[in-house]
Image 1: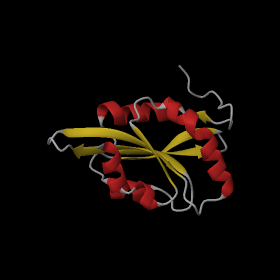
Image 2: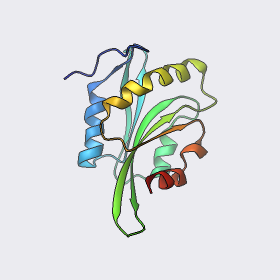
Image 3: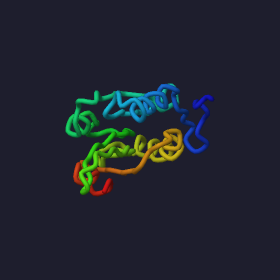
Image 4: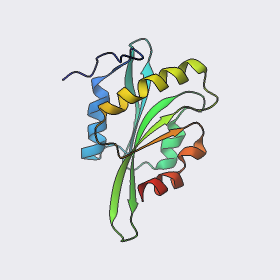
Length: 143
């Protein structure tokens, strides 16, 4: 099955490597996070960076550009009130308020189709500044 088909609203396809890398995060736990970007020349979403399982949330947030948009998935491990170890996968649409208008529009129009390609997302966060995706926000959503 190919995932390179154009998105009707933005014309963006999804590189096959995006789905396989997400599956590695989801099933094999070989990544803590994956950051995706839109490659305008190829007209598709591609993997920009992966984080090893030993990396933490601060490493993840430091990997996001301060002034450009990205999509990301983060595998959030936590312990419940009943002392059970759990894991939830968050999809984060990072669109900082200081980003240019064109990337904001491009990422906004491509988001829904791209997210549908990633089967197994538990929660979605749309963030325009770091406080909207703070670790406490993830904890609150996961519980």
